[in-house]
Amino acid sequence: MAHSSSTTVVDVSLFKTIGLHQLLCPVNRGGYSVRSRRALMTALGLSFALHAFQVPWLYCALNDLQRFAYMAAVIIYGMMCAFKGYVLVTNSDRLWWVLDAAGYGYTGCGGRDPSALRRCRVTLSALLRSFVALSYATLIVWIVLPFFVDEYTPITNLDGTVTRYRTTIHNMQFPVPLSVYNSRPVWTLIYVTEVSVCIVNVFIWSIFDCYLVTMCFVLNAQFRTMSTGYVTLGRRRVKPLPQDTPVKGVRIKFNDVKSNHYDDLIGHIEDNRKLIKAFDVFFDVVRPVVLVQIGNGSYSVISLIFLTSLMYLMGVPVLSAPFLKFICGVISLTLELFIFCYGFNHIETAKSNINFGLYSSNFTEMDLKFKKTLLLAMKMNSSHKRVMKVSPKSSVGLEMFARVMNMSYSIVSVLLNSRS
Image (cartoon, rainbow, N blue to C red; front, side, top):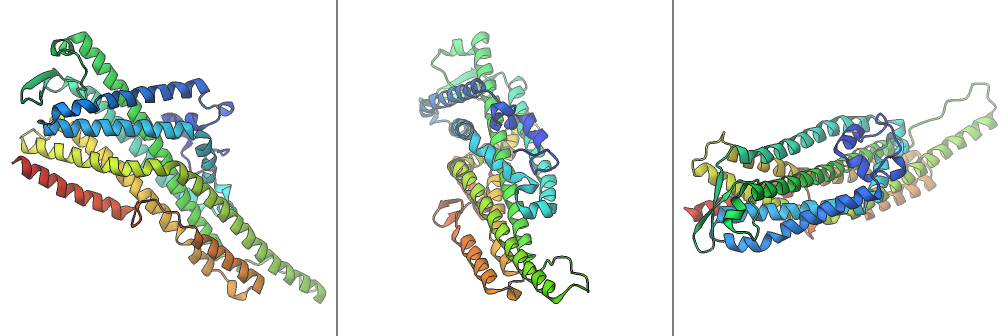
């Protein structure tokens, strides 16, 4: 990404602020050292191990549906964040290379007319800054919440007895006696551990999602710019010759015009291929994360909506600290799920218009060689059918997001009715 902040769609200052730029950037250009990346991988490994350690304790909460749903969401999301961080660190070089596609001059079309890329930058920057602010605001709410709620949290055990644990962020379970758990030194250690895990999770999910959304917007803007560039093919003419130019010279100039149009088409095709290559690398890296995220995000949203609804029906005030905690969680996770679905829908919308741009060019006035090359370009675009799908018939997009939200309403209704 060898571009200044004024010649790229990337919000470079935001990327540097949240640490994404340093994570992906090579060391010789100001990025994190190998030791820093290893330290991050160690933190991710410890976070994953801690969440995995909580899985057996879910069995003890089978008689407490509220506790079970909440801890299952925490465990799954913690593991998901560790997976995102692993993908970022292990593919940092490839992801840094893909960021080159955000430059205005990455394609000839973008270099000549970067208007779509500039508009994309403004919208993207506002969206990402709002998302990061909401993510870290949610983190702060969850961190300070234990000091504004009841000092002890009741948890129903498998045998039906109720145990009161001193309130932390998640009240993760550890094989220690209740009296030891509730003692101030041990409680402080557990609280600090959970704070550290939350900070790592928010750091990872914010930088990964910022990268993913950035590239979705970049690819959409570049594909739209390519489509607009294809429309101009066959319409641009070189500056006309003076009137006293010999006839022979006119013929040469006419041939140059034809040659210029053909060379312009070849240049567009090369840029198109380069853009598709960047899309393929991006797709290969993020595809496993996106597919897992859709399932994980769907469960997390359903769980938190259920818990929020349950608290409301139990008479918990809307302006209370516990209610605020779950509301912030619901908003953040729903927005994240929407971003994933919208991002790939955004790419596919622009990518599908490339051939329409080719068809809208002035190819009818061109020679046979130009027409054959243009037809090959159409076939090249038509043959590239990579779409983010969770099943052969279900692709990631706004339609999927609508189905998830509708399913959330149905499942939550069933769960609430079962309790009554």
